[in-house]
Length: 105
Length: 177
Ligand SMILES: [Cu+2]
Image (cartoon, rainbow over all chains, first blue to last red):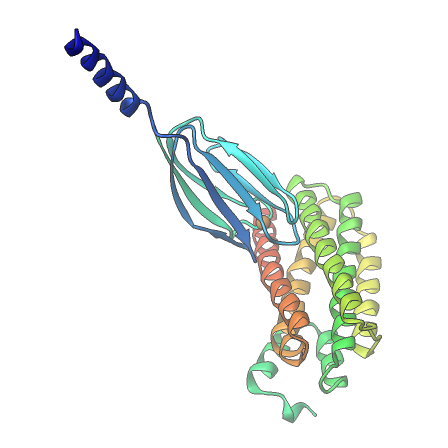
């Protein structure tokens, strides 16, 4: 019996290890017309916090149409990542602002 | 007076519009209150041009461009007003501002006579030339002359945005052909 209990306990431990780590929150800033960091790796379920430090509006717009986030001056917004892929995104108002977001399954 | 200008400034000025050239040489080295006035006036001019374009433009791209100009220039001017208030500076009218306003009024009257595709083309061509001239003045005259660090930094941010506008305008102009 103690042996069986131990194996249940072991199974519980193993199970908790298999359950994915808690989703992360990753900050991406837009400051003085620059997106930083320019390359971010994330996982499905992670949250991106978009922070616009500028006094004018930006957008974070995926070239493949997956997202289009409006960022008013000095405001932030969040997106929860739901689809895997390597996404090139840019600001529609200032197309020189470009960056990449890698979303792993 | 021109002799005192650096070669780089002189080269940039040759590319600029006649008004910025005249205005620039009329004022030897603008003071911060004058710089604030020139920068604000330059913004108002492009805001008014964008409003005219929103009414008259035909092409979807030109309309979208005008909307972008309105959004950014209003944001920069709002920030400029907040800064002069904070610094307790009263923007001071000057020959460059006056010449800029006069040239802009003439241009608006000229554009007002055009319609449809002809308007779109002329508006965008002027936006290219105008941003080129303003960026040249910012780079060679206004930014180097600004003595307050916050004013200088605002002008530098403005330059960065307006360089993007110039590229955007050039892109739209190329698409219209
Ligand atoms: Cu932007």
